[in-house]
Image (cartoon, rainbow, N blue to C red; front, top):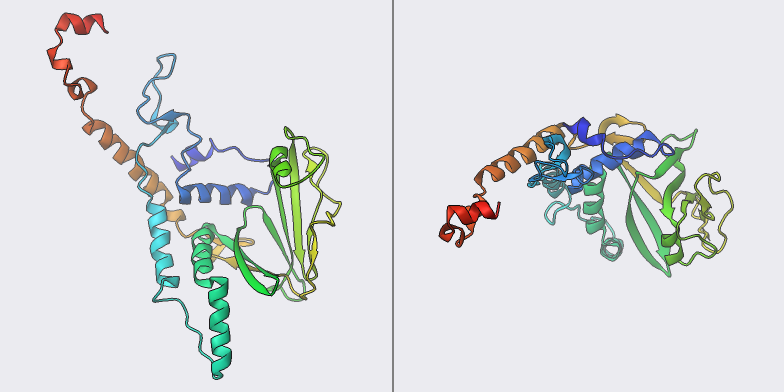
Length: 287
């Protein structure tokens, strides 16, 4: 059933296979895996009167087994009682680090990263703006890391590439954009800068001209991104998915509970208090 549902999710031929795999896992995690199915669960017949099989219907109950598994595991990592405490021989440094963690809201960031990263991987972006530290979680579906050849555990660069509607770019202040066109959006982080590129319409190649107005040079000497692989295993830049083994069971639970719900819902006539006062002839006239 899982493979059947996956076939209803469109695959972008311009993106790497891992992008679609992470997209499917993300949909399972947030409960939108069934959104591409064309019929609601109670729609047993289509407009032509033909029977609609269960595989084409969205379950009416979403138990969220995979989400429960992930949230329970994350609570053991970064809940209030499990988050690592700062310890240092120098009290002043310890206080400074504790204040820094609070300023960055690192506990909240790590909880978010553990949830999103359960699909296989996650990235955390560090920025320093006007003397303040900011950490933000980035899903890796559209990110491609490259590692240094002489240090395979050190990032050389990270590239973000995805498609976006022109109307969205106009909303972000871009000029000379066709709102009905689809564009490639790209930016890249390396040890010296965060480089944005001018969007390019899909079908005209990939972005190559730097957007100097939006690009920022940081000269940190390292890529300000931490790439985190989830569990041992996986493939390439991604670790294993936390809940992959539970997906089929989760889908089965959703459909079984939906079937039970349909069996327990009373007949609409029984729910209408006026229906009992109608004569059989009146009910036949009304169909």
